[in-house]
Length: 160
Image (cartoon, rainbow, N blue to C red; front, top):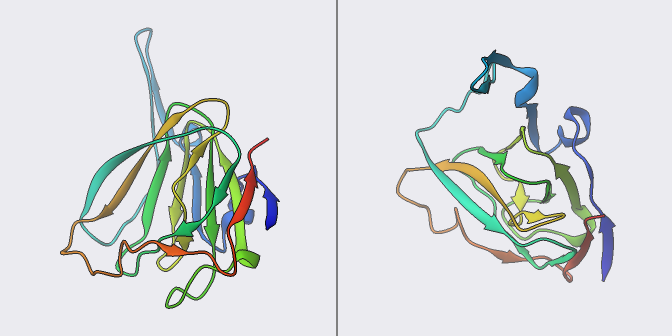
């Protein structure tokens, strides 16, 4: 089984898979009661639903992935550091183990997956954590959320 180590996400490193933003680099409003941050830009060309996923922490085997043909998928890091596992393999067939990469996101990070990029559910690093995502609200294409096994075998992802 191939084994990979998750690496911190950067704009350059994530570019083959989509776009990366750090919300703390955007506009901010600070008062004595709160701090708020907003991106200067985030363009999506489709109506989307907002969702949340709670994910387990620790090293894991990435067994299967999904990809979306109809839209990009923004994923917002929630209450803890997490790992996003992706593959830039032909979306018509299956995710290839040799193409799997893993990126570390921290609260305030946003990864926007390009159309056709394979991705696993995210995993926490120090603790079970949550992340938020946006997905198309069009009538689902049966292939749009189909989970396909990684070939020729799963990939072991080390989070630390």
